[in-house]
Length: 185
Length: 152
Image (cartoon, rainbow over all chains, first blue to last red; front, side, top):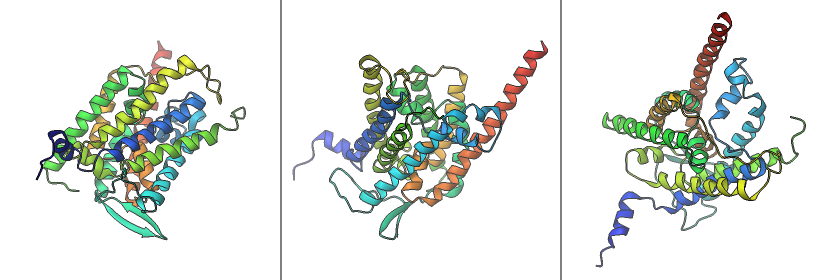
């Protein structure tokens, strides 16, 4: 038997699910951002939606500064949900298959009216507490994985690159510690 | 705003659709896959973030040079530049703790609803609560600063 060349072996170890679904998904994420940018000049991020939507129910000054953008941020978020639903109806449901898309084995699939949906196994308390920190952190830190990570890095912004390095390192440490403590999933 | 271009909202929606489809396709809407990256079990996330950043990077570089103003708003094309201060490090660290604990970030959480992940509502509730708490605190802080300056 011929052994795989070293690069292929490395790829199999570092990328057990291949690379194509990640790279193609990333190109789509970038493309969505580009469509909005070319039409409007807005480098859109996802986390400001939290504060801008809170401006509907709270009069606090911190939220009111986003009143002028809250309606389109709502539409952007609705688009994200529907875009992911379109993915669920096609690739996730097996209606479209491609060698470039590798389905995963995580979480649980379930069917609703011919639609294959997916649900996480990650425990609710992790999502709730983690979400709480995410909500505080992205807003104090001026951005999240899309604002800093995609638009900011794409802008070669030193602030964003520093932000990404910061949250990457802390997230890796946190995830490793949580896993070492035996919390799974 | 009433003077917005009629295609403004439809374009935002289309952009969001493509963005959300990409998050679904790349499996970033699945917290497990993000956690696998953070535990060094699957490095695919790097391709998502840098794949997306390269696409925006080329556009953000070329658009200001080749195009005049954005057709739907008349705004000038600019890069996304935020001022650097301690908050970027503090906030980034807090976000990192949350991301590492849950495997969820804002955009991916919205997309997660679209792929049927009802459990993600816990994360969304947490995010809104966190954003509310910091907003409350910072609004008070801003109010005190203004009052303090007025008293001088």
